[in-house]
Image (tube, rainbow, N blue to C red):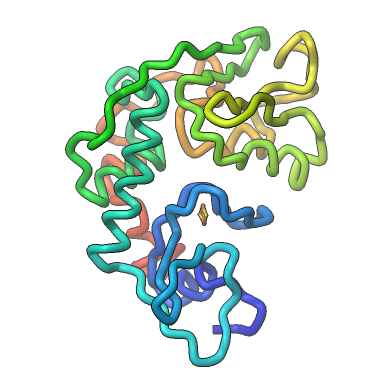
Length: 220
Ligand code: FES
């Protein structure tokens, strides 16, 4: 591993996939979802924010860690309204793809069925709070890659949501379908209108190739 790299970057450079959600190449790592948790010399650490160091022993693909990952993903499924079969991101959603990879059958937690808002004020883009997992990738991508302070978090605790930084909602901000913040959403929360089913369900990225397979094939 090269000095200065995080565990996740070093692993990917060596063909090892560490499951993750809030981490994204090109963005500052924040270590918020904890899906990438690995054991470093026996202690749980976030692989996306922990730099490599001499003598580290890292465990990744163990039943204990994978069950912790399953629990986190199950909480995300239970806490929102995901309804995969009717979601436009089905087959290209990282949350769904991770659930398949880690063999989740049904969440161990009760569904909460929250009432969440949709912002469909923009002509071309909408944000569906029902599917937001608060990974913050869109907020960081808007700021760090698009250089636009147009998205942010509001609320506290279980009520935290992504919101456009205008009282008019998305209609009041400078956002377009080509922006990195739109592409950064790993789930079906930020969707470009009038693009549904351009790629048929069954033929999408994770319908044909499991998440992480590109990294394991040395192409990540
Ligand atoms: Fe590392 Fe989310 S991917 S904490």
